[in-house]
Amino acid sequence: MPVNDATQAPIYHTLVQEHGDVLATARQAAEETQQTAQDVLDFSIPRRVSPPVEQAS
Image (tube, rainbow, N blue to C red):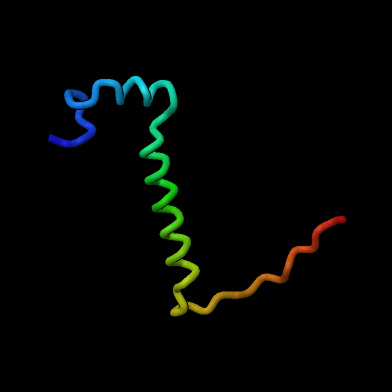
């Protein structure tokens, strides 16, 4: 049986309702970070470097 099966952890659904699905949110953030890292570290495609953005003081 899967670890997050409702029969093993009935409190899980209550916690998700109260706080949101933290595990799914963390998983999505990790996947987005991994994709960003792959894009940044992919040197096979030349990229244009944008000029620095000036900040107002």
